[in-house]
Length: 285
Image (cartoon, rainbow, N blue to C red; front, side, top):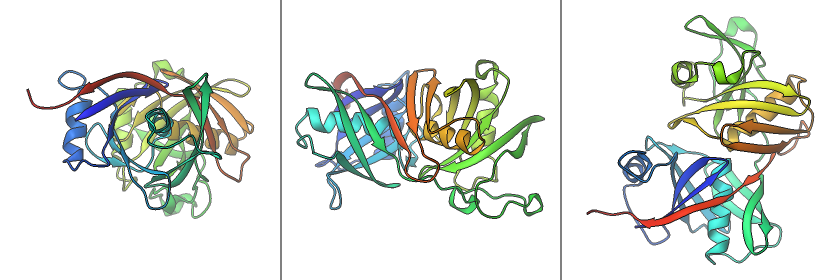
């Protein structure tokens, strides 16, 4: 199995052209993602044919679970497909079928190489049942956005705002520097909290300057990652709903920076880098 390791802001995946392959992909994802005994990645992304878009993307987390969407991964997906001639550079952007819906990726070029992309990430879903998250009826949240919902884990208060970008997110703005937050302790407890029937991605965020945010992300099925595209979008949506940010925000994550644009009602747009790391072949000794 030939593969390519790629990363967007440090969020790294193993890419496979699976249009003519049939394998146990959850098991393959667990194996290749292992950073000691495998290639090392946050998961596995497959390039597949589609009947409704230019191509179809399947994304598996490091634990083998399948994710609906990956904002960093889809930028690298577009770079892979265009630079290998799987599709010609399409006018108006590359359309990609995902479990979260069809997404359009507009590549950004440096010379003839794709250096990044701007992705139409769809409209955020804010109703609790769409995230999904089960809230205490006594708290009065029924429909519409649930802002600063009081979650408490091991006596740590977490005022969370819930957003779906096709996958579920719990965003927590705090004054404590994100670098000091015990994410490896609290993150898995939030991910597996019974209020999230499909588990959840958890973001801890600081407002550092007007239009500037700093964040860390605990990704469902992968643990802490260097960046998360859908997470960055959820952070920007939450920040605007809370009156902390405007339409455009730069988000600094451990692996790099992403730029998010949201006008408060329409689609969210994500822009960031796409980098090829190396190529190889995976198989039995």
